[in-house]
Length: 103
Image 1 (cartoon, rainbow, N blue to C red):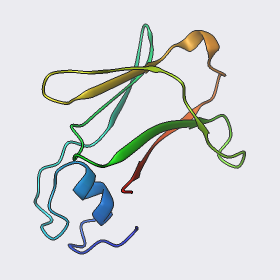
Image 2: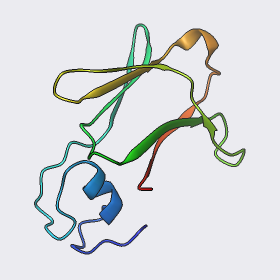
Image 3: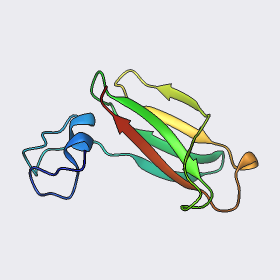
């Protein structure tokens, strides 16, 4: 899962998931963007390749493990996904990751 056929520093599965070509370092995928906004932390990504499973996870401490983040997700007509984690329930320090898998 961590192989990098084109040597660009991005794993093959990540490039595939976001519509890139794992064998071409110049393929133009759309990678996840995390921004802090007035309504919380916003994660925007996609579109993702059909059949790829994605899960947003968070942790308050990188050594404590990851848990699924229960947030409302919306998908626009072009397949771009937006998820917002409101500040109210968030600890002062929070880490995020997007888990990608292919069944």
